[in-house]
Image (cartoon, rainbow, N blue to C red; front, side, top):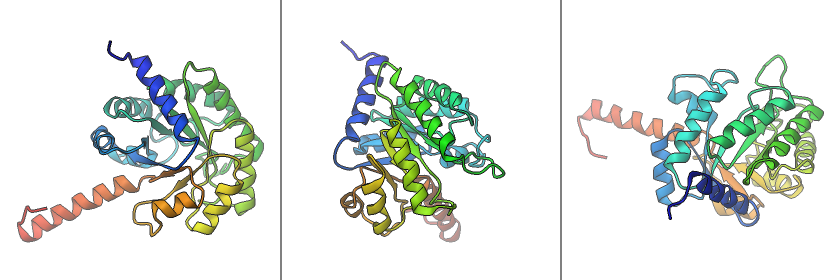
Length: 263
């Protein structure tokens, strides 16, 4: 008997949760369904949307509000259909400021077949900036509660932008936020901006749970080094899409300059 859609989504959700329980795995952020299918065939552990890559593929900027939740959900649906590996949603600020909006986002992205989603504490509004810690935690808690109410596993990642944007409090505030996210049930913690092994070791040891580390393509770090430093999940962010675009541009420039079509 063939697998139903609900059974497939449940299998992928279960697999995604299992990946966060031991070892270290690669989460490749992709910008289109063709890349999702190719990486699934290549044996990648899991994939994710990239807000920056998705925005660029449709001629938008990577800024809160430039791409709607519905547009992102439709994009996610296509990626889930293309790849038989778990998919995580880069949901930016969760498409709203208040905790109630996080529940709506969880429900919408779960309906696409995604296996989880990450929620940032950056508001997307330069005037408002970072949500205060209490609100940031309440937003993650609301997302976790909505995920727990689903009929299948759905992993919530609590993400803070303090290090990425060089905001007040630095590493101490980063750890305080990650620990608070873990306390309200986030199954993965994420603080982009950990560019060296020493910082990675501190964050993975003190975050309070499984930790995602961003390692863009072009980094001098290796998978084994970051895994040994304590990462449970390693993501690429928008770097894979950027590399694909750069490679395509270089090929066309060479054709125009030399007339050669060889790869």
